[in-house]
Length: 449
Ligand code: TXA
Ligand code: MG
Image 1 (tube, rainbow, N blue to C red):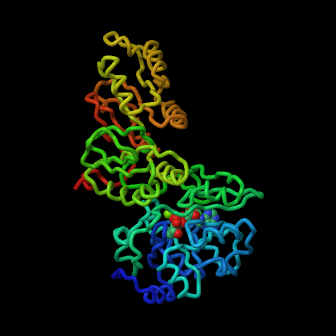
Image 2 (spheres, rainbow, N blue to C red):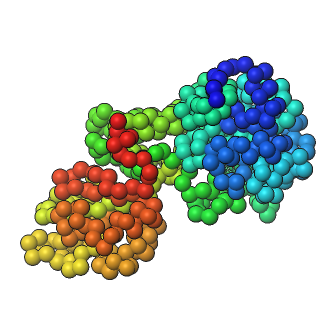
Image 3 (cartoon, protein in one colour):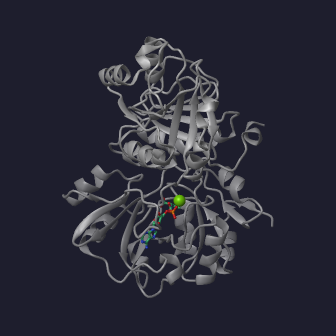
């Protein structure tokens, strides 16, 4: 199938009327759109995206006047927000109307609706007599596209048309809110900051964006979403200048690096948001093995960036060999990698040659520099201990008996951990970070070429 890139609304409208799926621009990200009233057309979206049918779609309308039959009623709070923020990056969960097929809402009692602000898509919605169901135009679990070129990289040959609206202004998905037991709940932070909504509503929004592993009953709840194709480690105060990494920062860092991406966040968080997904897609193509991303302060628009990066981040562990590092050097390594907790795997945690690695002195010294310490020499109890530590700490290192970190993984520890979804990094005795294993199918060689 040839994929046309065009700004011609009438071609787009004709295809949609025939039940086709096309890509459309919005002010947030590109969407894969189809007639929201036709179950058959909607099913094609799920197939193209390889999206589980349990994950419902947002219905895009011209404005509040186009909601008849789509929603079963518009509560006052929703009406107020539509008047103020539509067209714009705000999605509302409202009681589902009879015109919407079950496929769109995955059988849920509410339907997600929004009026997108992009002029081409607004014109398209005027030109067709139905609303458009549209998820972001990426294969399920991948980074959302914010340019027609990125849509083409994912879906060229699979869809007949990409409506070319240029790069998306906001670059991050819409904010989703809804009502539960009389309270207004923020389900997905997005391009419209929480603070702006709270100010308009005159009340605080409850939050329900926790990550679970079961299919969502509420939006955006799949644990790994918006993920690039190599391990992304999020949350660094200062990412270390690793040569194998693509590095994304929001503040200047005191080193230069061939794959350093600086998205100034301070004054211009909106620019950083618009650049985030294109930057992650660039990082995917660089000849690096993983991506390190500096922490974003989760306020205003930062809440959405933080949310996406947290979801894109692969749960990971570091292993660090018990080499004969003097204490000061060992401590410097822990600081460089911002290690928060150490799990000591050594069966006999004492050392004749380097006494500071004995259990007591090590524990005390780590405590002094604010690093948690646990000892777990029993291979059968490792996984629960690791999971427990990772609930509390972002960077956990496993301390092994071997100076050679490749030998840390007796007890098929790395198999178990990668099967559980962890990426494992070695902190080499030389002080570099090396990706040992990651539960990602692309081979490193393929990516590096
Ligand atoms: O900015 C956006 O919202 C973009 C553009 C294309 O409009 N769309 C978008 O769609 O991000 P998508 O499918 O990638 O994310 C929609 C989220 C999903 O997490 C889904 O679970 C949730 O909204 N959702 C949609 N309908 C729902 C419903 N009826 N009940 C609960 N959650 C729903
Ligand atoms: Mg999406």
